[in-house]
Image (cartoon, rainbow, N blue to C red; front, side, top):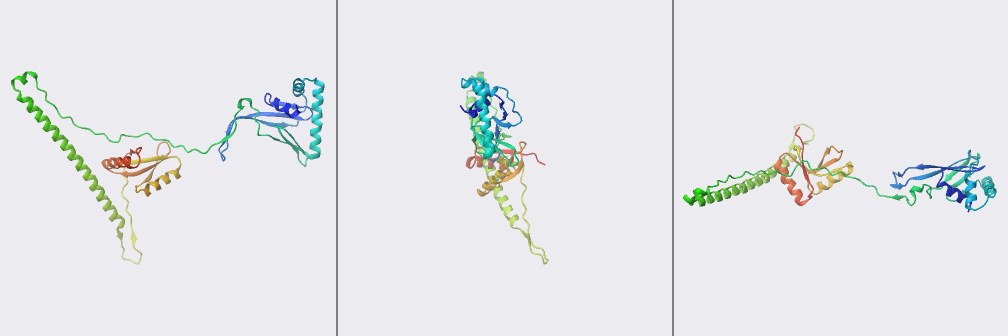
Length: 317
């Protein structure tokens, strides 16, 4: 085995390996790290450095060579001395020489000795088998909890009169009369509910038509001032309302703007309504002042566009 192989073996187990009359190789543990630009992940490792000031032998390298090669201390010491002479000669003649798996030495014009460690081998035994890898960047988005249910419907219960058994024998016709009254009551109640739902749907549709016509007239209105100035057109925008149909929440502001553009291209009155308590930019399909109108719009979005859409109700100013 060469001297570089012996030094490499000792670096796995010791933090300092001294080469007599040459210098010391020192290891220092470095934690796992991530390269911010390339997204490369590196495991924990030992970083090797060189200190030219530590040249007094501590017997570690010589004893290791003698034990490994089954020789005596004198032969091992002579082998280290020969290595030192060859290394210094290479530095004096070529200004550089390399140790396999350890690093490269070079000497500057001023005579200063430089050491460039090799990074392709990890001397940290606990990281054996671990290698670096590169991962694509990940943008995490937090899913916000729904703040309220879509709709809560309350129905009144129709009271039911129960006749006592003793009265059935005396007046059996009352039983059939009660059944008839109950049937009439249920049919009337169902009919009233159906009529009420039809009226609400009609009112919502008519209100939307009226709002659309009103908004079109407002946007097309032009105010002309009788003076040399050019006519000025004012675009009056309706209040947004405090019922919002949420399309998503984004940590990156540019992603929120892209979502708004996509929804506008589909015909939605999409916009951003600011950040939520988690610091995410919220994007809405539309905003409404009327709760029933908002619920109807939410049903349409859930049916045709996004089953995960939900309704956010903000406090009125």
